[in-house]
Figure 1 (cartoon, helix red, strand yellow):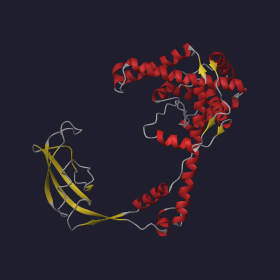
Figure 2: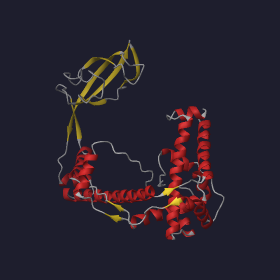
Figure 3: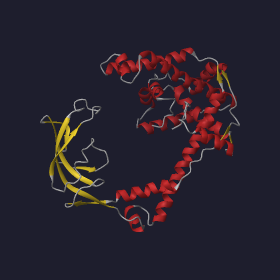
Figure 4: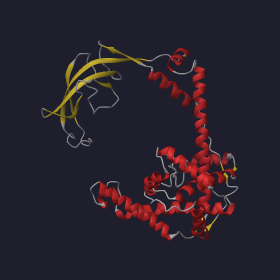
Length: 383
């Protein structure tokens, strides 16, 4: 589903835990939001906001990836039954592992054959080295010691013997990348058509992604530049309690108390509540600012637009009626209205923003700043 994410994973939980509504009319719902919110909001600049447009360059590496993938998908294999396996060869082996004379879980190929590239490091140290020098049909023992820090505690540090058979050496035959390959394996007739189509597809995806990034950048600037002096305490508390009730139900369904349930996700109860409170306030702050902009610009939402949004959500979820949708996803009538209003304000802010190309100085600063990790502290994005 393409629901707008309100912040991180915790907010996704929050959205699913909202109780269903009491049937308010859309107009009264927005009027109530305005009366509850606007007095606490001081808007910053929301028109004429400057931003540097994102531009994703489609390099030849993108196209080469598709060419390599096409070749890989059409690569064939020959089974070589003679010669000697050397490092770098792909081989097919079977094996049965023993520790103190007993087999163990995961140590047996069960005769299915296992494809391994020697030197890939797929197996523990020394295993692949001991296959080198053998020929197809050879049966031999591979003696290894599992590392002390091996992921399976039952095997860590243990000596093991693998009865191994080298079934065959694999010769991979890559096709030549040419018009004939393209015509036989794709919907295109020539390499030029194939590469042009792939580039156009990447450029279209990049343009869509860049636009979404620009909209998010401008919107976040507006949110950050506005001030909220106070949150509606009852709404904050209600939403926090809804989340906690939902988590409590999940814990009970899993047969554990809430502390145990949260510890499985790296939280204690107090830190979880703090995270929920932060997420709720972040969402409500954004909502208050959006409603204040809508009020300042006289932007409204009609019943027909809300009905259309409901229909879109029904199609996305595969549900058949609004009542079931509201119950299953916890939407109130106010939430449907706000989803439409949010989209309008999101687009309005972008349409009234000013694109400013980056100067060489800015580019140099960006390059110097990119030496470390970049914090993405934005809390709003559109999927």
